[in-house]
Length: 276
Image 1 (cartoon, rainbow, N blue to C red):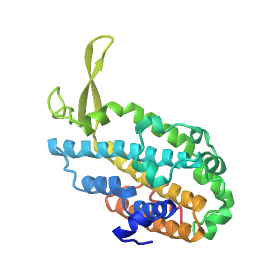
Image 2 (tube, rainbow, N blue to C red):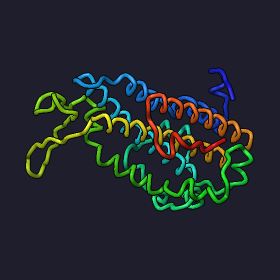
Image 3 (spheres, helix red, strand yellow):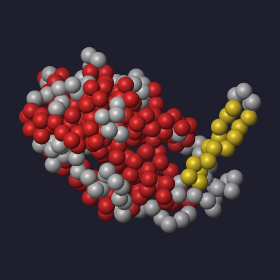
Image 4 (cartoon, rainbow, N blue to C red):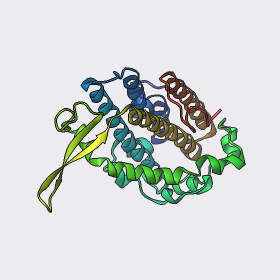
């Protein structure tokens, strides 16, 4: 699908949703990953500048977690009779860990996941028809850990909410004083209202930690591409689903190549392509 700016005001909500998904798969879904891959490749071996860039990578991880929460929540609301995906994501009133809750946390198989998120019409036969190749025996395996992964994401968002807010709003983090200058750590102040006392919370920005963060961001992008393919298969015709499936595959292959180029590897990311 392509459209000029003049088409924007004349599109139906279904047409706009597909236009949004097509664009998001190629652009928005990989913004955090593109930024962190460039930062990782340019990361100095040591020094304060290295720590600054490492902190930005962690900030992008926290943003990516919230972005995924917004996407998943919008899909679930669509199932419940809510607004179209582009509308819900554009004007969501909630962000963060409060969005990562619901029946999808309990899903332990591919079918339980599709039911929980609202993809009741998605079948292995239909996925194969649109070019998303997966065997019946592999369908549950492919998505079996999705529910537990989302639950872990919710915990992660909650655990790192304070440092995320410091990095996003004002940069009130320490990286030099309090014995931090020669370390791979940053810190932020936390306030206990009951005890009227400040404490120092430490966050690791070592090479291992930032590499894990970038892999995590890449996996979030992959999960988003998979979910958008399933979403399109559920709510739109086969032509649209085929287009999104192949766009998602191309973007995923680019993502894998970029990750490998900076020396990253991870089971389920650089050694697996879901759509073919």
